[in-house]
Length: 193
Image (cartoon, rainbow, N blue to C red; front, side):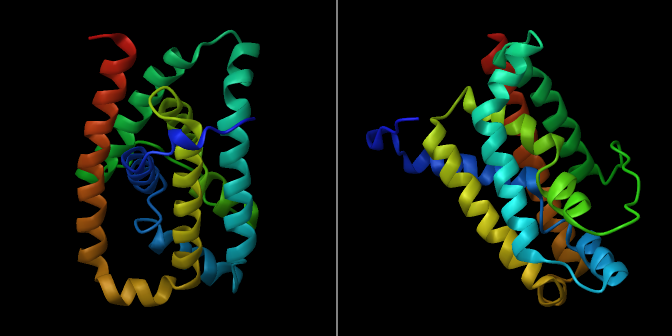
Protein backbone atom coordinates (compact mmCIF):
# COMPACT_ATOMS: atom_id res chain seq x y z
CA UNK A 1 0.00 0.00 0.00
CA UNK A 2 1.35 3.42 -1.01
CA UNK A 3 1.29 6.18 1.58
CA UNK A 4 0.75 9.84 0.76
CA UNK A 5 2.80 11.72 3.35
CA UNK A 6 0.70 14.84 2.70
CA UNK A 7 -2.23 13.01 4.33
CA UNK A 8 -0.53 12.86 7.72
CA UNK A 9 -2.73 15.15 9.77
CA UNK A 10 -2.01 16.00 13.41
CA UNK A 11 -5.69 16.54 14.26
CA UNK A 12 -6.63 13.16 12.72
CA UNK A 13 -3.76 11.45 14.56
CA UNK A 14 -4.90 13.06 17.83
CA UNK A 15 -8.54 12.07 17.24
CA UNK A 16 -7.76 8.45 16.34
CA UNK A 17 -5.33 8.17 19.25
CA UNK A 18 -7.93 9.47 21.72
CA UNK A 19 -10.71 7.25 20.32
CA UNK A 20 -8.53 4.13 20.49
CA UNK A 21 -7.27 5.14 23.93
CA UNK A 22 -10.84 5.37 25.19
CA UNK A 23 -11.92 2.08 23.54
CA UNK A 24 -8.89 0.07 24.66
CA UNK A 25 -9.30 1.61 28.15
CA UNK A 26 -6.06 0.14 29.46
CA UNK A 27 -6.20 2.41 32.54
CA UNK A 28 -9.67 1.09 33.37
CA UNK A 29 -8.36 -2.44 32.84
CA UNK A 30 -5.58 -2.06 35.44
CA UNK A 31 -7.55 -4.03 38.08
CA UNK A 32 -8.12 -6.85 35.55
CA UNK A 33 -4.42 -6.84 34.59
CA UNK A 34 -3.44 -6.98 38.27
CA UNK A 35 -5.77 -9.95 38.80
CA UNK A 36 -4.35 -11.73 35.73
CA UNK A 37 -0.81 -11.09 36.97
CA UNK A 38 -1.74 -12.42 40.42
CA UNK A 39 -3.14 -15.63 38.91
CA UNK A 40 -0.28 -16.20 36.46
CA UNK A 41 2.59 -14.77 38.46
CA UNK A 42 3.94 -12.97 35.38
CA UNK A 43 2.58 -11.31 32.24
CA UNK A 44 4.71 -10.92 29.12
CA UNK A 45 4.05 -7.24 28.40
CA UNK A 46 6.13 -7.16 25.19
CA UNK A 47 4.44 -10.21 23.69
CA UNK A 48 0.93 -9.04 24.59
CA UNK A 49 1.57 -5.55 23.17
CA UNK A 50 3.08 -6.86 19.90
CA UNK A 51 0.28 -9.38 19.33
CA UNK A 52 -2.39 -6.73 20.04
CA UNK A 53 -0.67 -4.32 17.62
CA UNK A 54 -0.43 -7.03 14.96
CA UNK A 55 -4.13 -7.90 15.30
CA UNK A 56 -5.19 -4.26 15.08
CA UNK A 57 -3.00 -3.47 12.06
CA UNK A 58 -4.08 -6.67 10.30
CA UNK A 59 -7.75 -5.89 10.87
CA UNK A 60 -7.26 -2.29 9.72
CA UNK A 61 -6.01 -3.55 6.33
CA UNK A 62 -8.01 -6.75 5.75
CA UNK A 63 -11.13 -6.06 7.83
CA UNK A 64 -12.91 -4.38 4.93
CA UNK A 65 -12.14 -7.33 2.62
CA UNK A 66 -13.47 -9.73 5.26
CA UNK A 67 -16.69 -7.73 5.37
CA UNK A 68 -17.04 -7.91 1.58
CA UNK A 69 -16.70 -11.69 1.73
CA UNK A 70 -19.72 -11.84 4.03
CA UNK A 71 -21.60 -9.18 2.04
CA UNK A 72 -21.36 -6.13 4.32
CA UNK A 73 -20.23 -2.60 3.54
CA UNK A 74 -18.03 -0.48 5.83
CA UNK A 75 -20.83 2.05 6.47
CA UNK A 76 -23.14 -0.67 7.85
CA UNK A 77 -20.28 -1.97 9.98
CA UNK A 78 -19.56 1.58 11.17
CA UNK A 79 -23.21 2.02 12.21
CA UNK A 80 -23.09 -1.30 14.07
CA UNK A 81 -19.76 -0.16 15.55
CA UNK A 82 -21.36 3.07 16.75
CA UNK A 83 -23.82 0.99 18.78
CA UNK A 84 -21.01 -1.13 20.27
CA UNK A 85 -19.06 2.04 21.14
CA UNK A 86 -22.24 3.56 22.61
CA UNK A 87 -22.82 0.58 24.92
CA UNK A 88 -19.15 0.44 25.97
CA UNK A 89 -19.39 4.16 26.78
CA UNK A 90 -22.56 3.57 28.81
CA UNK A 91 -20.72 0.89 30.79
CA UNK A 92 -17.91 3.34 31.50
CA UNK A 93 -20.13 6.28 32.47
CA UNK A 94 -22.82 4.44 34.45
CA UNK A 95 -20.67 1.64 35.90
CA UNK A 96 -22.89 -1.01 34.30
CA UNK A 97 -21.81 -4.40 32.99
CA UNK A 98 -23.52 -4.95 29.64
CA UNK A 99 -20.87 -7.16 28.03
CA UNK A 100 -20.18 -10.20 30.15
CA UNK A 101 -17.01 -12.17 29.44
CA UNK A 102 -16.01 -15.44 30.99
CA UNK A 103 -13.03 -15.30 33.31
CA UNK A 104 -9.97 -16.76 31.57
CA UNK A 105 -8.71 -20.08 32.89
CA UNK A 106 -5.16 -19.45 31.68
CA UNK A 107 -3.29 -16.19 31.25
CA UNK A 108 -1.49 -15.83 27.95
CA UNK A 109 -1.93 -13.87 24.73
CA UNK A 110 -5.62 -14.78 24.62
CA UNK A 111 -7.07 -12.95 27.61
CA UNK A 112 -4.65 -10.03 27.51
CA UNK A 113 -3.85 -9.16 23.86
CA UNK A 114 -7.24 -10.46 22.73
CA UNK A 115 -9.90 -9.57 23.84
CA UNK A 116 -8.71 -7.19 26.59
CA UNK A 117 -6.56 -4.89 24.39
CA UNK A 118 -7.59 -5.73 20.81
CA UNK A 119 -11.16 -6.88 21.36
CA UNK A 120 -14.33 -6.64 19.33
CA UNK A 121 -14.86 -3.00 20.29
CA UNK A 122 -11.37 -2.07 19.11
CA UNK A 123 -11.77 -3.93 15.80
CA UNK A 124 -15.17 -2.36 15.16
CA UNK A 125 -13.76 1.06 16.00
CA UNK A 126 -10.85 0.63 13.57
CA UNK A 127 -13.18 0.04 10.63
CA UNK A 128 -15.47 2.84 11.78
CA UNK A 129 -12.47 5.21 11.97
CA UNK A 130 -11.49 4.15 8.45
CA UNK A 131 -14.69 5.79 7.15
CA UNK A 132 -13.59 9.12 8.69
CA UNK A 133 -9.77 9.25 8.68
CA UNK A 134 -6.78 8.40 6.47
CA UNK A 135 -5.21 4.98 7.13
CA UNK A 136 -1.74 6.32 7.95
CA UNK A 137 -3.18 8.56 10.68
CA UNK A 138 -5.01 5.56 12.19
CA UNK A 139 -1.74 3.57 12.07
CA UNK A 140 0.05 6.28 14.05
CA UNK A 141 -2.85 6.21 16.55
CA UNK A 142 -2.49 2.42 16.89
CA UNK A 143 1.29 2.66 17.45
CA UNK A 144 0.94 5.43 20.05
CA UNK A 145 -1.71 3.44 21.90
CA UNK A 146 0.33 0.24 21.88
CA UNK A 147 3.34 2.12 23.29
CA UNK A 148 1.09 3.42 26.07
CA UNK A 149 -0.40 -0.06 26.65
CA UNK A 150 3.11 -1.47 26.98
CA UNK A 151 4.04 1.26 29.47
CA UNK A 152 0.89 0.55 31.53
CA UNK A 153 1.44 -3.23 31.49
CA UNK A 154 5.00 -2.73 32.71
CA UNK A 155 3.95 -0.29 35.46
CA UNK A 156 0.49 -1.49 36.53
CA UNK A 157 1.15 -1.60 40.27
CA UNK A 158 2.77 1.86 40.32
CA UNK A 159 -0.09 3.41 38.31
CA UNK A 160 -2.71 1.86 40.58
CA UNK A 161 -1.01 3.45 43.60
CA UNK A 162 -0.57 6.78 41.78
CA UNK A 163 -4.18 7.22 40.59
CA UNK A 164 -5.95 5.28 43.31
CA UNK A 165 -9.31 3.61 42.76
CA UNK A 166 -11.25 6.89 42.60
CA UNK A 167 -8.76 8.44 40.15
CA UNK A 168 -9.12 5.47 37.78
CA UNK A 169 -12.92 5.71 38.05
CA UNK A 170 -12.85 9.43 37.16
CA UNK A 171 -10.65 8.74 34.11
CA UNK A 172 -12.94 5.91 33.03
CA UNK A 173 -16.07 8.10 33.25
CA UNK A 174 -14.42 11.03 31.44
CA UNK A 175 -13.42 8.80 28.52
CA UNK A 176 -16.89 7.25 28.58
CA UNK A 177 -18.45 10.66 27.84
CA UNK A 178 -15.95 11.20 24.99
CA UNK A 179 -16.89 7.79 23.59
CA UNK A 180 -20.62 8.63 23.72
CA UNK A 181 -19.98 11.71 21.58
CA UNK A 182 -17.86 9.66 19.14
CA UNK A 183 -20.57 6.99 18.86
CA UNK A 184 -23.18 9.63 18.02
CA UNK A 185 -20.86 11.25 15.44
CA UNK A 186 -20.17 7.89 13.75
CA UNK A 187 -23.89 7.09 13.65
CA UNK A 188 -24.81 10.48 12.18
CA UNK A 189 -22.02 10.48 9.57
CA UNK A 190 -22.84 6.98 8.30
CA UNK A 191 -26.64 7.31 8.30
CA UNK A 192 -26.81 10.87 6.99
CA UNK A 193 -29.10 11.95 9.87
